[in-house]
Structures are given as C-alpha cells and as structure tokens.
Image 1 (cartoon, rainbow, N blue to C red):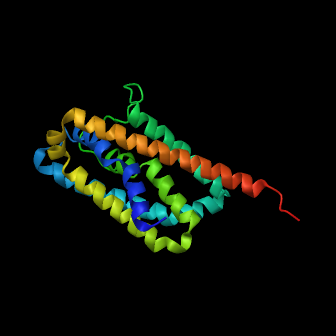
Image 2: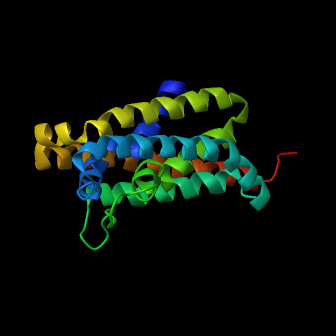
Length: 201
C-alpha cells in the first residue's frame, strides 16, 4: 500500500464529513469566540493519540499474542459495523454523544477523530510492514490534516452542503468503507487459512 492510498483509507475511516453534525452539536454550549480554539486543541490531541498508538500498538499486540490475521479480521469487523451505521443510521445507535460544557478529549478527539476504526487501521498497517513506519506516520499526518481542514470549516460546510448534502456524502463514504471492510475480512481469512494449512512435503 502506498502512502497516498493509506492516507486516503485513514481519511475515509476518520469520516470528517460525517462527523460535522456531531462537532456542531458538541460545540453548541461553547462560546463562539472559543469554538475554533477548542476544535484545534482537540484535533491536536487526536493527532497525538493517533501517533502514539501507531508506535505503541504493535508492542501491545505482541504482549497479547494477537496475530496479524486476527487483527485484520477484527479491524474489518469494526470498520464494517461503523460503515453500516453510516449508511443506515438510527436514533437508538447514533454516534452522537451528549456533552456538558466545553468538550475535552471526549468526544471530539476520541472517538470522533481518533476512533476505534482509525486506530485499528493504522495498527494493521504498522503490524504488516513495521519497517515502513515513516511512511505510515506520513499517511496518518496527511489523513489528519485533510480531516482537520474539513472539521475546522464545519460551520461553513454545513451551510453550503445543508443537511441533505451531508447525509448524501456520509452514505457514499459509508458504502466505500463497507467494501474496504469486506476486503479486510477476506484478506484476514485467506491469511489465516494459509497459515493453518500444513506445509507441502
């Protein structure tokens, strides 16, 4: 996987467009003069979490003796469930979280930006090719930067696209993520079967 394709995958997983309504709701109780400062702070915190997990994640996997196929399948399942909620949202299982006062770390940094699917995806990249850590770090930074531009312009995008436009884009991104999740599941199953097959004499 190239840096650009990895960055695009992470960008889709972060889903900044789909998170715009959640950011706007979470910031309703924050003074207008502080909203941009709060968003920028949370974005930087999210980047710190993403970078930390990129390097600390493989050690955690090694400690827990989690294999690459298991990680691939788990990442595919998590991504599939989140993508389904993007395509078929429901009030009972909404990604929105209630916030009292000014949000700090939760829910803007975690899980809206540095969510479980983004952490699982970067962990998968790092576990497959740890020697390319610089490429994955660059991919994470590019994805975060692209998502940050959209999130910082959330109010303007919300006015331009409107509710229906945001919903349409989120559905489209959800469909793309479903195909990515299915591919991850197939890859994980194929690798697991190959590892379990006895060697040919």
